[in-house]
Every structure is written in C-alpha cells, then in structure tokens.
Image 1 (cartoon, one colour):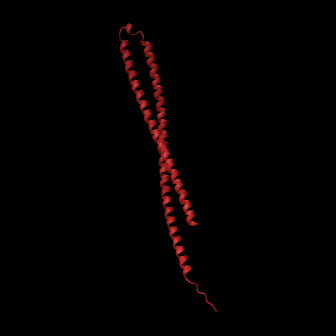
Image 2 (cartoon, rainbow, N blue to C red):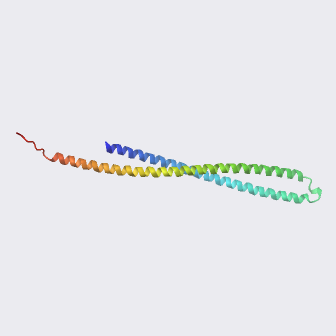
Image 3 (spheres, rainbow, N blue to C red):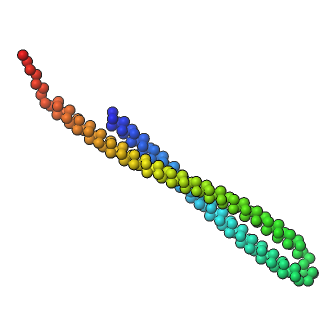
Length: 163
C-alpha cells in the first residue's frame, strides 16, 4: 500500500512537472510573440522617424522656395499647411507607438518574470520528485527485505513442545 501511495504521489508530481513544462513552453511562445511585436514597433518608429526627416527636408525645401519671387510661392501656404498637418499626424502616431511600445515592454517584463518564477517552481518540483523517487526506491528495498525475511521465517519449522 505504501508503494502504491508513493507511486501515486510520484505520478502526480510527474504530471505537475509536465503541466509546468507545458505552461513554460506557452510562456516562451508568448515571449517570442512579444519580441516580434517589439521588433515591429521599433521598425514602425524608425519608418516614422525617416518620414519625419523627409518631411523636415521638404519643409526646408519649401522654405527655400519661399525666399524666391512670389510667382513661385502661390501654392506654398497650402503645401506648408498640409505638411504641418502631416507632421502633426505623424507625431501623434509616433506618440501612440511610443505608448504602445512601453506597454509591450511592460508586458514583456511581466512575462519574463513569470518565466523566471515558473523556472524556479520547476526546479523545486524536480528536486521534490528526486526525493520522492529516492523514497520510493528505499521503500521498495525495505519491502523486498521484509518479504525475504517473511519467506525465511515461513521456511523455518516451528517447534512445538508436547507434554
């Protein structure tokens, strides 16, 4: 009965280890996905920065055209207004992306902490499993020894005194 009980506990611990390993794999996949999202966001921010640099170049070009005679500046105000509107739009987009990136980084940090916690738990479970396996081996050895002693005691003839 003690061996069955220990075997059940070992099986239960093994199941817990498997569950922890499955959860760890899920978290690793989520961490990978989060890493991809961070990479995408960084690429988007870089593209927005490049677009802002291009727009700033266009603004400088338009300012250069403003210094020219008025005949060349008829549409300047319209283009400048559109450029400012686009710049503002890009700046708003950039601000949103920065906030989103911050949230993703926070989530990534939380996931990394969860992975570290699960890793620690797995270590504890593995240690406990090793102790339980050692106990099972010791119990089995004691059971075998007890069985041998019982068999030996059965093979010794009993002495009965008659009066």
